[in-house]
Structures are given as C-alpha cells and as structure tokens.
Image (cartoon, rainbow, N blue to C red; front, side, top):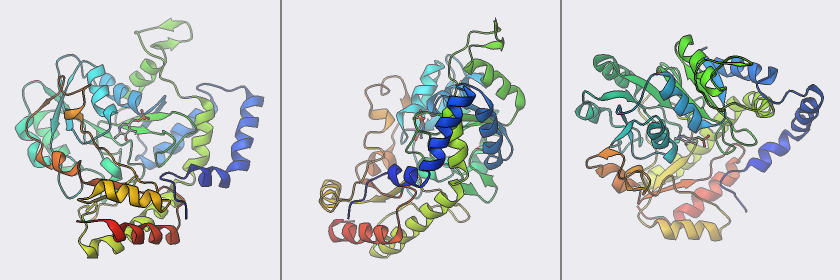
Amino acid sequence: MQIPFVNLTRQNNELEESLVNIFREIISTKSYIGGPYLDEFESSFSNIVGKRHVVGCSNGTTALFLALDSLGICEGDEVITTSHTFAATAEAILHVRAVPVLIDICANDYNIDVNKIEASITPKTKAIIPVHIYGTVCNMPEIQKIAKKHNLVVIEDAAQAHMAELKEGYAGTFGDAAAFSFYPGKNLGAMGDAGAVVFKKEEHATLARKLANHGRSDKYLHDIPGYNFRMDDIQAAILNLKLKKLKEWTENRRKIAAIYDNHLKPKGFKVINPDKGNKPCYHLYVVEVSNRNEVVSYLKNKGIVTGIHYPVPIHKQPAFSNVSSYKELPVTDNIVERIVSLPVCGNINQEEAKYVADCFLEIAKI
Ligand SMILES: *Cc1c(COP(=O)(O)O)cnc(C)c1O
C-alpha cells in the first residue's frame, strides 16, 4: 500500500471535471483578480466564521500580517505567542517590527499554556496570537478573559484550523481577527497560495482590504502606502468549489483520527488529547514516540509517508532566536524531539488508516 502524507491527487481527481470548468469560465469571463469569484468566496467563508468580515488575500502569512497591521500592532510592541508553530507566525510579528514573546505549550493539546500568559505580560504587550496548532482550538474563553483584563488584541492563527470548533463556536470567531491559510496542503487548499483574514469589526476589515490592494480607495487614488496581497480569482473559484466539500472532508479526518486514537491510545501512546467539548479538525494527526527516526524509516519502507511538525521550534531557529524573547520552554523542547505526524489528509480511507496504525505499532516505542 502506498500512502502519501497529503493525497491531493485523490481530492483533485474527484473534482477534475468541475476544476476544468473553472479554468474555462475564467478564460471566458477574463476575471483574474478581485472579481465575482472572490466576492462569492468571502461571503461563503463567512458562514464558517460566525458571519465575520472576511478579506481574501494572497496567503496565510499576509493574512497574519494584515491582521497585526490593521489592528495597530507596530514597532516595539510585544506579541505573545508560542514557539511551537510554523515560522510564519513569528515572521508576521517581525514584519510589523514587533517582538515575538514565546511561551510554552500544554502537553495535552500542544496549544498555548494559558496559565503562563499573564507572567509574560509587560507594559509593551499589545497582542496575543494563539495558534490553533494541528487544528485544535486553543482555550479561547480563558484567553479572551486575560486579553480583556489587560486590554490586549487577540489574533487567532487559524491556518490549520478550518472548521475546528469549541462548544462556543468555530475557530476564527473568538479573536479581534483570525488568519487562515489556503496553502494546497491545508484542510481547505487552493491550487497555489491563498489566505483570508477575518475581523470582528468591519472598520478593520476595510483597512485590511485597502492595505492588501495598494492602499487604494479608488482605482487611481492611494490613501495610504499599501501592498499587493490580493487573492487571484481563479484561486477563489477553486476555493468556492472545495469549500462545499470541507465539512465532509473534516468529518473524514475525524474518523481517521478516531481510528488512530483507538489503536494507539490503549497501547499507551500520547496523542492529541483535547479538552472535553473541543472538536479538532485534525489538520495533522500527531503522536509521540521515543524512537522517531526508526518509526519514520520503517513506515517509509511500508509505503507510508510521515511528517514532523515541527522539529525546530521558533526559539531555536537561526532567523528568530535573536529577535524573539523567551525563557524556559520545557514542554516545547521535550515534544519537538518526540512528535511524528501520521497521514490524515482528506480522502484517506479506513482500511488505509488501519494499515498505518498496524505498521506504526510494529515499530513505535513510547
Ligand atoms: C501554514 C501556516 C501559516 C502560513 O500560511 P501560508 O499560507 O503558508 O503563508 C501560518 N501559521 C501556521 C500555523 C501555518 O500552519
């Protein structure tokens, strides 16, 4: 059996006819940037983020940047986030000239440890970026409480968390803003780069939209110096098509994750263990092992491709170690040596998941 880590071929084959029709439509409508397909996408995507104001943009990194910039985070401000994330979270903070303040995660769900936030707040702290890592929503009610008490902005990094939910709502509906990525391998993926930033308040969305489009208020009038962070219409049209499948694909990921859980947990393996009422969208299925190199190569020989998300945390990256602020991060430092991601992408089936779990158990050590 051959099981790729992310099986986009299967997903795209299923949609091939409709995808080809999108290309035909774009050729005939000549709608390349910021046209009706983007309008349609922004309005349908708002349905899974509590009807918030959605601004389509070029990728998840520019979505984070637009959130920070539109909410007024700037030079010298401190932004609290986790070290256990993808580089883009820290990059976006640095691009508004703010300082990433990295704190530790909880061992159960790998998300920001809310009990460590207040100790990291200084007079310079302006924002918190909780990263819903692997598609498990952070403890947002607690984060909102802390943010309110200290007058901080909250920006959700929801790049891995499309349709992940707490009983209080979907990822992206808690912060002042949230950033989503539609990188091809994300739960909702374009056929190229794309992203969206969603805001609680319309005024911030208006500013972000302007910043993403050269600071324009009109075709030939530029109010502020902006950027070109727009989403292509062809990507928006592809996302419109795939968004209709997102619920089904998310349910499939949850089914596959449940199969892994049922095989691995009784044998004592530490897997993502969300709080009660928390429903991850399983962008990644992560398990801890003590013999990772062995596991990865054994599974590779069995035709199974795995990943590591992420082997080097932000505070140990050459790009960020000197420009971020952090103290001890014992949970992060421990788990980055142990984590391995098993294939869970969209259209993997139950038989394949059982094969992966069986092969994993033949080699993995706690
Ligand atoms: C993918 C990702 C991003 C960045 O998204 P891009 O679309 O690749 O720019 C940001 N944060 C996290 C946690 C991600 O996984």
